[in-house]
Length: 218
Image (cartoon, rainbow, N blue to C red; front, side):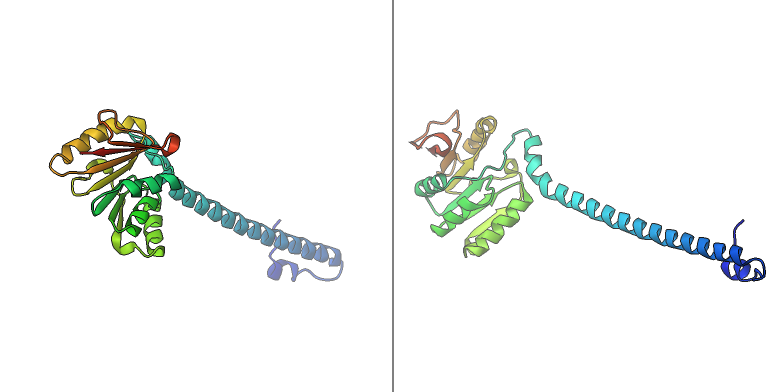
């Protein structure tokens, strides 16, 4: 049987029914407390679910740009340039304009701007592009730098005096062909770090290991 408090329990006479009335009061109070407890737990579960869901989406949005390069035909992962590499690149750069292919966190572009170059960086990771822009503003060279989230295979590099590339083995040969085709009418200096172009003969070779730098004059 189900009892409604205002209609059933209060209508029970006191004579001879006091124990039943007390029991119903106790039972109703216990059911009310149980329902309130269940509501609180449901609310907490919803909050925890929203927090976990939001954290998962945020983590995916943050990590995905770092994973996607590994799924491309030519994998170009983010590996920061060493201080020695940056120093050698700026030392060997020439002309007035410089482009960094796969600019990462923008350190080469920023140092080139400090050295007086108009420097541009191309990077597929939007978070690194945003970080590079903020970092260039922090170092006071944002007027002389620009960073673009764009596929390097769709960019023409013929307008730059110096081209810098921190590549990987499987992309150096096709990138070399692309640069040879684009630079045929414009004298350009190409600086390759860590991996060299197999079809090009370097003018200068510097350092060794992870700090290796090859300079090509086209």
